[in-house]
Image (cartoon, rainbow, N blue to C red; front, side, top):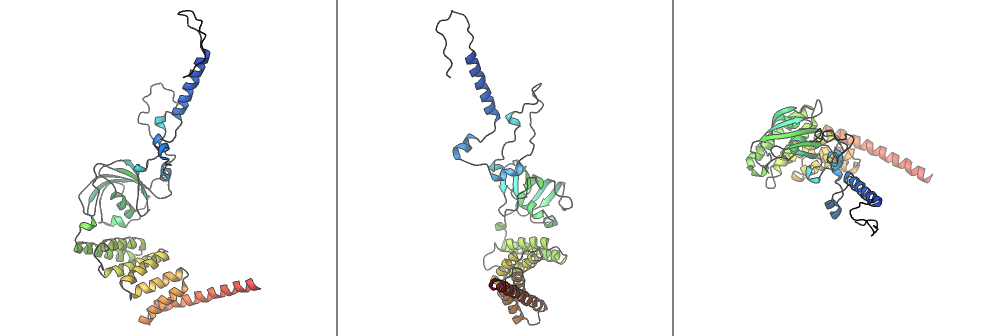
Length: 347
């Protein structure tokens, strides 16, 4: 560190004032203190050119308790140390559900590498679910792949989160775009389960049949969302079987399409019907529901083609007759609007 020049003529043992040195040292100390207090990217981040993970925004503005608060004696309370400032969430603290339905923020890391599988009985501490959601609060026992708890509004999401956790792990569930957690889960313990690929073909078909039956019950009870989850789980089990798979797949896809139509998802319904018709080209319910979905999407020609195929195979099908009549009326209105637009354009 360079200092100001000192006169070479001094008396031995006499201390001379050094105002410039003292001022320089004070300025340096102040600069170091400011540098320590100012948060900034880590050296590793600067070296790699890594930007903060956008998902870390979900925990912005949350207060973090200081584990050593109150142990500073008479220290100035107005001073905030760097330890008390919330650090940006690391990417390793987050787990993104592959289907994009939620983000898991790990609060306490678990032990080991094993995770719950199909049939695992989990002892869970759950809290924070919205009132009226039907999800449990406090300590509860949940079995992966079994139980009506999975049919609740947040049941499937909770099950997916548990399947990603280790024993002793505590985590928050965050919905996309939300800074506040939906709920908090703590996985205290779980029994050994099995992956779907470890099941025999007959076991998979039996579980799929149970899901199918339960889905039909929910659909008849006016719960298309719960029914869709059951049909989806049944399909995931059957899709792991060697091709061509059981014929039940076509029925499940057609039933899933019916749920998706009621839920206002015509695009997904059309895709489900496509998959059903790939497995069974003459499936009349799949043809009819695809016709309804195409009409909702404004694809009137495709809708007409599907509905006419249904009537060709079953001329007395009242639902197809009524739907085709609606499509014809919708087409006439569409043509009239087009004609008016052309007249205005050339008038």
